[in-house]
Length: 390
Image (cartoon, rainbow, N blue to C red; front, side):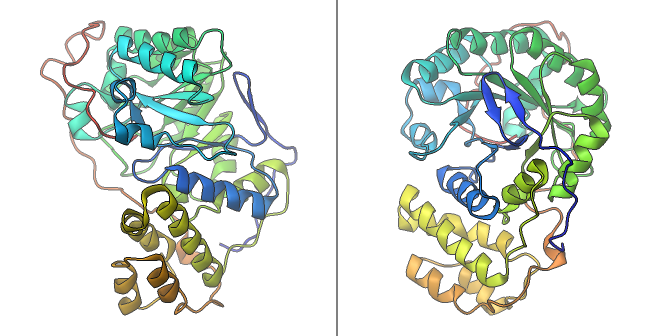
C-alpha cells in the first residue's frame, strides 16, 4: 500500500430511501466488532483524515425476539453515540410476527434511523435451525419477514434493507429471487455477500453474481460485499458489477481508517497517507478507551486484544511485545506497551489483504427436510437464539 490511489472523476452518493449518503460505503455488521466503540472510532478517523463522515455504520446484529423482550445484553448492543447519524441497526429474525414487533418497537421508540435485515449468517448453529443464510430458500417466508419489517415502519423515515448470500450452496442459489422478493415487499436496498453459505468466508467472492443481481433488481440500489480490502477494491467492484454501493466487512479489521480512504476515493478527494506505527498505536489506545467506556475497563481490555493482532498485522513488533499485548489488562498497561513500538515505522505493504475469520468451505447444516418445499411458510422452531454473524 503506497497511499496513492485512483479517485473517481465524479463524487458518488447513495440513496437508501430518505437517507442520502455522501459516499456509497456501508460498514457491515460484525459480531463482537461493530459496537459503538468501533463505529465511533471509524467515524472519528474518517472525519479527521477525510474531513467528513459520509457512509453508513451499522451496529452489531440483534435478534428480533431478544429486542422485543428487552434482553439487557441486546439493549446494550443497540447503544449509539450521541452524535451518531444515521443510526443503523441490523435485525435477525425468522418469524414475521417477531419481526413486526421488533421493527415497530424501533420505530415507536426512535431506536434507529435504518433497519437492515440479516439473511446472510452461515454459522452452523444458525442454519441448522433454518435461520440466516438458510432462510431465503423458503422464499414465501422470506418475503413475509421482509414485508413485516416494512409494514411496521410505514409512515416513518426508517428504510428497511436486506442482506443475503448467493445461496445455501452452488446447487441452491437464491440471491436473484431474494433480491426480487425483497424489492417487491418494499425493501429500500439489497446487499449481496458474494459467497454461498457453504463457502462461509473462504475462497474468493464471486463478483459476477453481484452484477447479475444488479441486472435482475432495477428498482432499488444493489450493494456488493466480499473481498474489499482497500479503496481500489471498492472502485474495482463498482466498475466491474455496476453495483450502487459497497459493504465493508473483514477489510476494516485492524484498519478502521479504511473508511477515510474510501470516502476520499468516492468523493474525489486526495487519498490520505497510511498511518505510521506510531499513529496506529494512538488509534489502538483510542479504541481501548472507547471500549472501556462502553464495557468497563476489564471487558474493554479483553475485547481490545483481538483487535491488536489485526492492527499489528505486517508490522515489526516482536514476539515478546505481542504476547504482552495479547494479555493486556488495563488502559495504563496498554499505553505503556504501545509506547515500546517504533513510532517511525511506515505502514507496510504486507498489512493489506484478508484478515479475520476465513476458515474453509463445508456442507451447510440444515433442518431435516429443509430443501423439500421452498414455499413452506412454517416458522423454524427455536431459530431465534442469541447469536450474531453474516
